[in-house]
Length: 229
Image 1 (cartoon, rainbow, N blue to C red):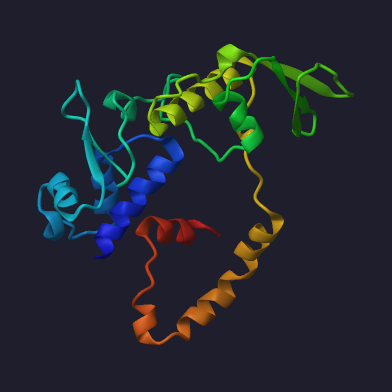
Image 2: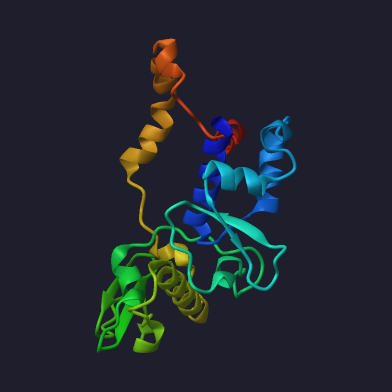
């Protein structure tokens, strides 16, 4: 069912970006925008629909029971469910979490004996060193053992959440934007995204009806595509 795939996609995208449960109240608003007759699918209970179709895992805030959310199937819920609902410690909506370069992520995810320094250049490139040997137009930012996550026995979701918290604290302390350490998208991928869309649409139109019926694009993605000029 298309609706099930849409819910699964929305819940997964929210989890991948924020590491939080997607509140059913927010999910319902998004779905009603795209499905005018949505009530015919699950009536008044979105929660029951998700539970009976097994499209996601329902989680409830341990203190505020009115807060009900969904996380992707297969994700191990942390022992403290409250962390799945908490907003950013810095106020407002949860902060975006771009995919970070491995060498930067591991600075906070793995403990080490010596201090490390992130050397940032004026062109926003960076390198990691154990010494403060600065070149022209470079600034150094220290990472000590206290900046690292040290919970080896914790479930993976808790480790990821704790690592992000450490990274955000470190970036805020040093007045750095976390996007500075994000992985770069290859130019080839960016060029293909622009140049291949017309050709892709033409090739899809040549498929027979049976193959075309297997193609699914979530409504939120369609909306994003239509909003781009």
